[in-house]
Length: 113
Length: 114
Image 1: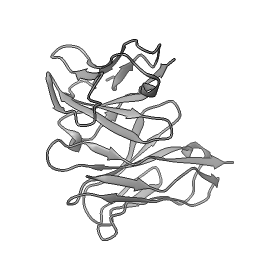
Image 2: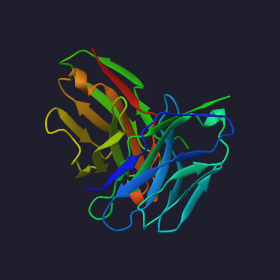
Image 3: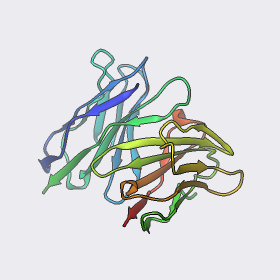
Image 4: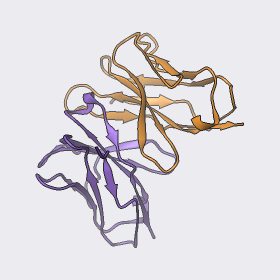
């Protein structure tokens, strides 16, 4: 079945450091891909998405490019802030039958001042 | 326009009791999804409902768990005879016309079984 694999956390960075969170997927066809962010005690919020190969999703300084050849959708940010501390989830939208989101296990990011 | 409303935010139940979790989707959304988040785990799909219909319950445990989304009122996730392993955060999401339109998540219900 469809699945998403994220890099193991936790990730701890200093403010203004460069962030990469790796995400790869296994799916039939070319699913839409998403990054969600979860702040402590809250639900998930959509961060960015890409619907086809070579698309780049971006929001709030975060970017991710849909790479069909490597089945990847890595999240990057050039300069993280303390307020970026959260758990980040990569997800894909299943195709065929009932569409639903399949999530990775999440990567906890802590940014220290 | 209120977002997805889940209640209660926190629920404590003793083993063997019933837990009822409620989810009111965003106005105009007729598709509801329930997910469970266990400690240190990602979100696991449980069930997908439209008004009065269960579309996909492939992620629901076969026993003790049920879900409904009636014509009027919120969607309900019901867990009978709760056990400690049911302790988790349960999230509801809604969408306008299916997952391809994008999900809006609620803040979740944190169930603790003592």
